[in-house]
Image (spheres, rainbow, N blue to C red):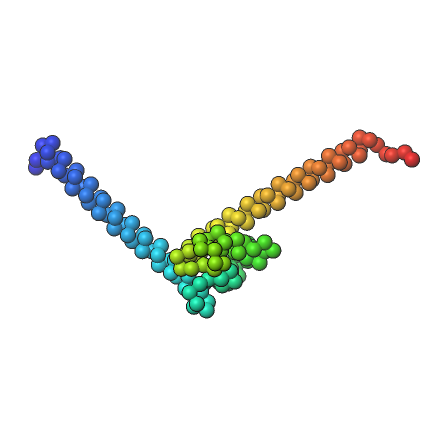
Length: 155
């Protein structure tokens, strides 16, 4: 049992090396899991197996993955996918690095990440709409107040 500084430094170096090896192993496993999720997402979305994912294919894949018969999240996702504003089209444009209008395998992100991005955009739009509605109500209230102050018109 050697407690000399040299022995302690050597033990610390061994522990650091072990920690680095474990970290590298964990990172590799995490990368492999992410890559598998990407491949699974692409395969699920590429309905006709032509090697690209169109806006409609992606919409169908997201619907299949996230729109079920139960839950508020499911109905919100259904509404989002069917919205007048094409959130899915905007998402494809954001991910489409070569700007060919479709997603290649290397442009794909996992479906769960796509859902998060879509819901973030939807929330931003809802917040903006709420602000606009509030501003319109304030203007209406101000107009009502002005009319009340003026009193009935004589004529």
